[in-house]
Length: 432
Ligand SMILES: O=P(O)(O)OC[C@@]1(O)O[C@H](CO)[C@@H](O)[C@@H]1O
Image 1 (cartoon, rainbow, N blue to C red):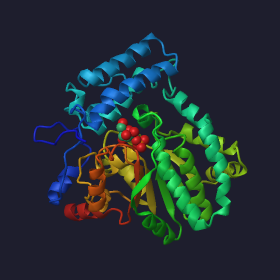
Image 2 (tube, protein in one colour):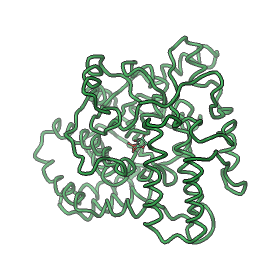
Image 3 (cartoon, protein in one colour):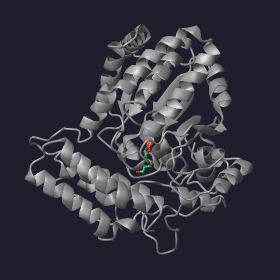
Image 4 (spheres, helix red, strand yellow):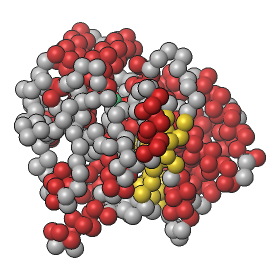
């Protein structure tokens, strides 16, 4: 574990647009804070992402598509800059140059490892799209550099088996089916392609759930008259598939009258889902194998036709900040949700803050800023975790395993009093 600690002179990205930052708010409320994770400490998880995972990723990206000399050189240059150089700004011609200049104020010109890990990773993926020409007019405009990996996974035999297994669902009781589908969506998060780049070969440990607030998730949905569920998706392929099956179950079983599925506006963290990935996954379901898969795919198609399922995105989902700093329009959208289900490790980091919290800090304190009741379905693949029982933490520490990052443990954590922190902030500032 490790990263670095937040000291007086430490650089943090500009949050000029944010009226009250998470740290200012905590200071004002006398709440505890924790060191922001950096990637400067050799041997830490964050350092390994830049120095071990990214070099392998870059090789895979350059092998997967026939990029020309300009793109190849730019990609190699990014790898060398991000492992040994300083943060260079986006070219002035980039459509979001100004935006990133603001987000990176005080960071450009400094070594990558001095930027918060979350910021640096987000910027790495933005720069990778720049290097491959994703936003520039030309051959590679709009071409997802990770599409070959995502497509291979979706077409693979493991997905065939998962689709065929859907045939067992009708024989289960409604309650059992709900549990099974929630659990599939949770463990589907282990199928993240960036994680697999450095996961040990043949590594398929039996999963273990170390926190389970699923009763709170289900009871919150059960008590609403017309439940609106927002799902903030994570990975495409073998994670999005069970997510969509869960969405179908929520809609057909009455746990949700409406579902809004949020995806990334552009390729990000290798396998993160975009709208194109949602469409490809629904198509995969419609084509089976298996009658139940076909029916699920058709129902999802019709749900999109009727508007009970909407797929949306927002630029903020690729922004380098925690959810605490989400812009007002997205906050307003999410505030109407009966429950927002947040998938995956990165979204969890953004929800609670990418900081070295004490693992027993209450989840409600870290997630209470979210504009709606919120539930996180996440396998642990980074240093951040909160809301665990002290005895569980002691037991995990005693194993000597890297339990926070191994992908072997998972959690369902929920908080149902949305906007608790928001309400305190409004009271303090006199806002209505
Ligand atoms: O969000 P996901 O797909 O569950 O996980 C993303 C991840 O693989 O990438 C980051 C490190 O690059 C970590 O947050 C985590 O290890």
